[in-house]
Image (cartoon, rainbow, N blue to C red; front, side, top):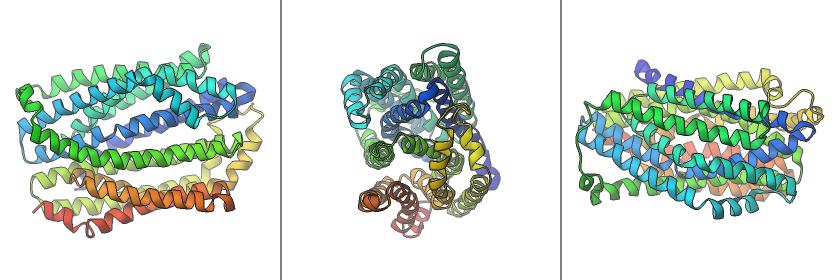
Length: 444
């Protein structure tokens, strides 16, 4: 079982770890291109990234919905069904991506007004970043569909290769456009466009050559089968609501940081969140393993293997959490210093502010160990309603703490709300599934 888990988890960890590294590099590049005004540039980047997180995470239902259903079809050896899942996910992804691109003007203006500051220079920086990176959105959503299908097919190697390629290309192009060139934040955005479209093209070719003999011929009528599409959208509808809550939490995290009116707190929160992201993408590898294997064992009606899978995924998740606690206790300053130029006049101030809140980053890995794996289990079991309801309740708690205590303890209320939000997600899912007994029943 550990071999099965690591066979899926390790490639996902390797590919996932490049995402926060890309974010760290982007933040570092922004800090260096900002010159004496590094804090404002990093803050503008964090707001721009938050806007795209809102778009992308609300579209991640395509990956999750595709992965769970594909894994169950794979476990049951239903070749035609997982072929149809590939085409259905691509059709939905392309439609959503083109819609988002077509609505870029209202989305952009609303987002900048909602998230932006009153400083005109910052608004210009955010706008330049947004209207350049929007060209990458259709490609990013198509990658969700392709990654979800491959995860369901128990293939973690191809997504790893593509993720590494995309993120290294993004880092290289960001350096080329923003440091060697003179594009600033727009260069970082353009790097996303080049990297993600390259990833779509390469992944499509790989899937064609690897799976062309296993995929069956299907008709448009079968792809758009009303009953199958209704099930697909029913699951995805729950995931959309779940993801909307998640994105709202992250978006209001950045907004609450900006609303303090202190660019140092905005910049520090953005950089500390990068440290949490570094952990989350590492631990998410075991969520992917739980996702793929849960669906496979349910499809194969193997409840014994399913129980072992759940137990060992949780063990691995907590082990990674304790590892990161040790890393953050010992070396958070060293990691933090990678995000900003040593020559910047903001260094001493930003370090002083970060020291006030670093304790939350040390605690969060333990609070978030269980939720990541529970998410994977629910995706693999297609228990989207539990995911939806647990996220709604956790989000309510988040906003209650944020706005109930914000006036009293300031930025600490934001970090407390975020920590409790992570912890409660796992607790709610555990008890809503009757201590996972409902999931085990699906495999009988």
